[in-house]
Structures are given as structure tokens and as C-alpha cells.
Length: 170
Picture 1 (cartoon, rainbow, N blue to C red):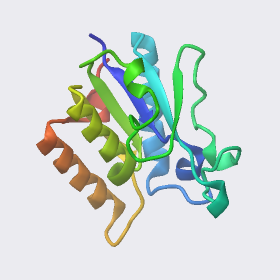
Picture 2: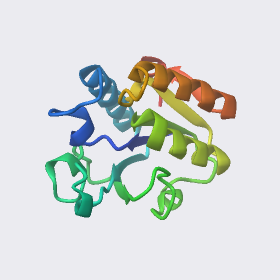
Picture 3: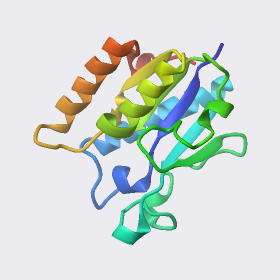
């Protein structure tokens, strides 16, 4: 069975100026290549979009430039909007994915939505492959790369396979 690709919060507010994550250009290139491979393999592709709160001026509030996806979805690809870190919570994501299907997870932010969605997928019986080098976050008391590495260790301990993005095959 071909893995489905979950692109989590690959939105302008985190990958493009004015405040992109560290190494945004390398992460964006890795995400673009993963998306291209998944498309060529005929994989299920789900673009998950975080929906910020316009009342507090979130940079990813609906209708703002930051809310827009970086990669234009093709007509056969799915777009789901979420309100929490877990992409399964209240979105219908589980209806788009065959039960127990393998998933490749990539996107933003490592320590929030990537982590929560990966743990939720594992709990639902999906084999999760986290694309190392194709997820990122912002520094928060420690360098962003250290935070992402700690998330990789945590998810590996929870049962995810952590694979360098350029070694992932669909």
C-alpha cells in the first residue's frame, strides 16, 4: 500500500517572509520534493491548514496571506482546516485515510502540530513515517533544530519511523 502524505500547516506565515522558521528554504525544498514524489506515486495527499483566530490577529487567520498554502493543491488532493494541534480532531481526516494505512508526515511546527498529529495517527493504528529534514519549528529557549530533534526522538519512542526526507519512497 502506498503511503499517504500529510503536509501539516505548510502555510505562508511560517515558510515565507516576514518571519519564516529557521532554514525555511531547505525545508520548503524538501517538502516540494516529497510532494512531487507522492504525486508521481498516486498517493493520497492531504494538505492540512491551521486556522488561526482573527480576533487576536493570528498570522494564519482565514483570508490573510499567512493562511494560504505554500503549494497549490491539485483537484484530486484534499485540504482540511483545523483548529487544534491534532489534525484528526474535528476535521474528518480519518475518513480520508484507509484504516491503518501508512502515513508520511511532514510540515510545521515540529513540537506542536507535527507531534500531535503523529501521535494521534499512531494511536489510530497508522504506521507513521516522519520525514526528517522536512519538518521545522521556531526557537523557544533552545535552537529550533534541537527542538525538532527532540520531537524525532519522542516520536520514534512512540513507534514512528524517522526517515531522512530524501530516503522516503511512496
